Image 1: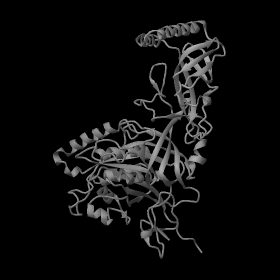
Image 2: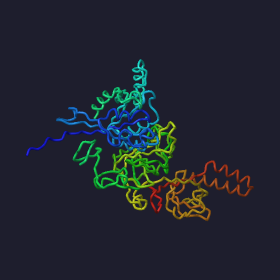
Image 3: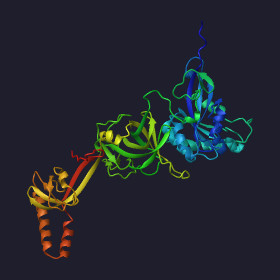
Length: 522
C-alpha cells in the first residue's frame, strides 16, 4: 500500500508582544493572527470586564516557509505571545519573555517610551536576542504631519536603543486598529503587511486547531483529557523525568541591571522570578578572593573547591563596600564575576541553568523608576529543605576580620602586654596562637590573657627592634610619671601618648557557614 503524503513541515517561532498598557498590543496580535487560541485577544471574562490584558494570550500567524529556511514545502508559524502591559502584572510579563525567540516592542507613537515600555526593553535585553519596534496608532497622527512625526519618533527610538543589544533593530509604523477599539471591523490595519515582511526576514493533539501527532519544546498545544475537571489544574510544566527540580535555595551568577537605582544589599529581600514562578527570597552576595578578581571564570559552572569573599553588597562602581580593591591608576577594581546565594521563602520548581530575575515589585508602580534589580543564571539548586545543615557548609564563603589594639608596655625584649583588642568578657584562650603585627613592623603571636581586664600577652619571636623598645619605654615612663601627679596631668599625658601609639593588628578570616566558627590565618 502506498504511503500517504507527508505532513508539511512547520517551523515555529515564538514572538513576544510587549509594551506599556494601552499601546495596542492585543489589537496588533489580532491584526497579525490567522488563528487564535482559547487564550487569545483578552477572551477571559476578567480581561473583558476590566478592558485590559491580564494573562498571556496566544495566537498564530502562518505563512509559506521562505526558501532560505529550508528546502521543500512547509509553513513558517509565528506563535504570538501577547503579554500584559500593566505594571502590577510584571511577573506575567517576565514569564512570557522567557519563552520567546523574537520580541515586538509596541510603542504608542503619540507617547513614545513609557515606564513599562522601558521595563519591557530591560526584560528583552535579558531574555531575548532579536527585537522589532512597532510604532502603533499612527492613525491618530494628523495625515499631513504623519510621516514627519513617524520619522521623528523613529529617530528617538534609535537614540534610545543605541547603547543596547538591539541597536539598529527594525522599526515599523502601523495602525493595528484604525479608529480605536470601537471602530468597525471593516477598517483595514495600516502597515501590518510591512511588519509581517520584516519578521520573515528575522528568524490526538491539536496545535491551533490543526491535528498533530507530537509536540516539542516551544509548541502550544491543546490536549483532550476525558473525565477531568480543568478547574483542578493550575499553570504548570510538562517535562521529561529529572529535567526539573524543586529547590529551597540556589547559587546564581548575576549582573546588576544598570537602570536600577540604589545598592543591592546582602540580607535584603527581593521578588525572585524563576521560570513562571515569582517568590520572595533573601540574598547574600559574594565574589572571588581579591587576588582572583581578574581571573577568567568558566561560564555556567560553580567551583566549590575555591574560597569566596563575603560582600555586604553587590560590588559596582558606585558601591560603598570596604572590600573593593584599587588598581594602580586609583580606580575601583571590580571582579569579573559575582555570585549570590538565594534563599526562597517557599520552594520553586525549575530547570538547571535557568534565567533568574530579581526585582523590587513593591516599589510604587507610578514612580518613574526601574523595578528590575538583577538577572542571572541558576548554577546550583538545593533540593534538601535542611540545606543549611547538609549543603551550605560546603560553600566556602569567608569574611575578613580586622581587630586593632595597642601595646600598653614592654615586659622584656621578646614580649609585650597589649590592650583594647578584646572586651573584658572575651575568652582570650580561643585567640591564643594567632599572629599579630605591630605598627612598628614586628610580627607577634598571642600567648594568652594577662589579668582579668581583657589585656593579653604577645610573644615577639624575633625580638623587639631597639627603636620600638625605646619608644615604648619612654611612653611607659611618661605614663608612670603622670600617674604620680594629679588626674588632670594624667589625662594630658594620655593625650600626648595617644599621638603615636604602637598599634596591634589582628587579621583573620572566618567561613560564614562553618559551624565551629574557626579563625583562619594564611
